[in-house]
Image (cartoon, rainbow, N blue to C red):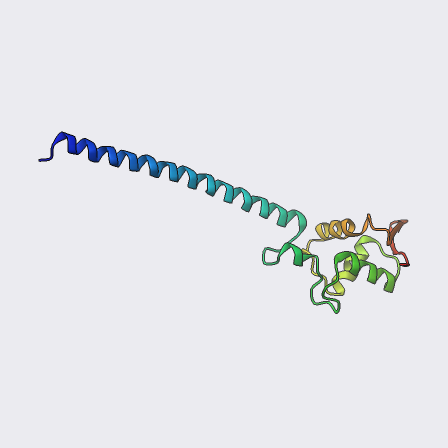
Length: 137
């Protein structure tokens, strides 16, 4: 049988290790919560901005399967408006998809993305519900 002093020393070491592990577990829980918060934020951003999970945020602005693969949403909208004439956002969305832009596949989301890409740019003018590409100098 072991002496009471040896048992208390062993128990003190065990208690100390338990406290150390509890501290590490608490830190792990904080990391796990942070990871979950970031994953939630990522998912919300994906839905709000119409991004697909398999694509990077930067790559999403580029039209897919286009003859102009590096065009931004605004550049593609400008090119199509200059080529085809004035269009509403809905008509522009159809033209952009026909030209190879995928977007999110959800019309309301994609219309907002196009609008956001062009509404503050001086190369575009909105008149009577139709967008026009202004000649660049």
